[in-house]
Length: 486
Image (tube, rainbow, N blue to C red; front, side, top):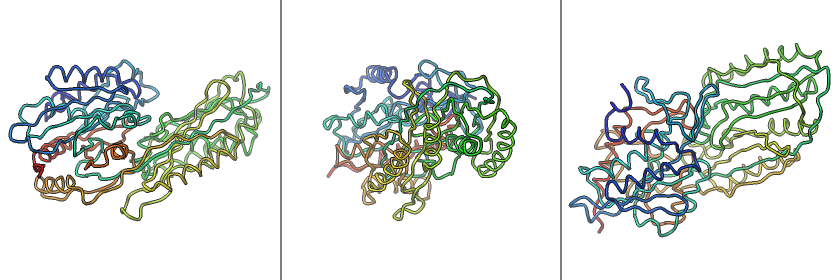
C-alpha cells in the first residue's frame, strides 16, 4: 500500500501532490504557482499579495448563501530537516513517503504534514462539488516556520470572513483556542583566529540519535538538546585539561530542538586517554537521563586531522560558559490552563559564520507577554556577561483564549454528536498565526484543529492515518452546521 491507496482518497491525493513540490520556508515559489494554477483549473477567484500569501475564494453551495463567510487557513512552507546520512535537496527533491502500520512517514526527512495536510484539506474542499458550505476564503500563508512573514504582512483588507478555522494543530480530538507568543534572542561571539600548537591530540566529538522535535509543542517532553549535551562534555574538558576549540556547530532552526551537534577540539597529548575515560563516564549518565525520551542517543569521539586555526581561548571560555548557563526547556507552567506550558526557552542552534563569528540562536515562548520578555532578558543577560553581542527579533503575539467563542461551541457540539465524546479544549504552547490575524481582524472568531502528527520539525515526523479521516469528517460537519447570519 502507498499514499495513493489511503482514504479519504481526495485529501490524501492532494497531500501527495504537495509532497512532490519543494517548499522550504522563504522558497515557496513553486507551491504558490501550484495554488494559482489550481484556482485557474477550478475556475475559482484567486489573489496573491506581494509577500506571496494566496487567497482562493469559493461561493456557497446552494442553500448555504446566508451563512457567514468562513476562512480556512494553513501555511504552505515546511520545516526542512534531514538525517545526516540522508541525501536530499529540499530545494528540488520531492519528499519520499512510506506507510508503517497506521502511520505515514518520510524517508530520512521531515514529512511536511505540518502544514501540508491543512493545505490539502482546504484544496479538497475547494475542488469538491458535493461538500456543503457557506462562502469560503481559503488563505494560504508563506514563511510561517521561520518568521511568520506571511501573517505579519497580511493586509487589513485581504480577508472579508467572519470565522477563521486554522488547520495547523496536531492532535485529533483537540480544539485549540489559544497559543503562545514568541521571540528570538541571538548571541554573536566574535573571535580571533589563533595558530594550532604542537603536541596536542585533536578529536571530533559528535552527538547524534536524538529525536529532536517542535520547540513549542514538545518542549515539555524533556527531549535531549544536542547543543547542551555537547557543551556539557566540552565544558568539563575545558575545566580539567585547558581545551582548545577549532570548530563547533549544532542544531538548525529556531523552532526545533537540536538533534545533532559536533565540535573539533584538542587537548595536550598526554591527556588523550583522559577524554575517552571522561566520555565513558558521561555517556551512560546521559543515556540514563534520556532513556525514556531519547533511547537512541549516542556521543562519539574520534581522532581528526590538526585544524588550520583555532578560536581564541578567551572566546572559547566565554562561549562554553554561556552555553552551559543558558537555560533550555520549560521555565513555568500555566496557572489558568492545567498542563499547559506557560513559558519556555530553546537553545536552538550554534553556527560558525564568516568574519570569525559564532552565532547562537535561541527562542522564547510564553502565553504571558511579560514572561516572554522576562525569558528573553534572562538569556540576554547570560550572553551579555559572556561578551557576546545580543539582539532580539520583534517577536509575535499570543492568541488569548475566548471560551465564549460561537465557532468553538459549534465545534464542540459537532464533535460530540459525531463521536459521542467531548473534544479536549486546549491552548498550545507553540506559536500559531492566529495571534497576528486577530491583531488585524479583531472581529474574527477562531479555532484551530488538525489530525494527529507527532515529532513535527524532525525527520521522525509522522501522521496518524486513521486520525485524518476523523478530522476530515469533523471539519466537514462543522462547515455544514454553522448557522445562518441573523
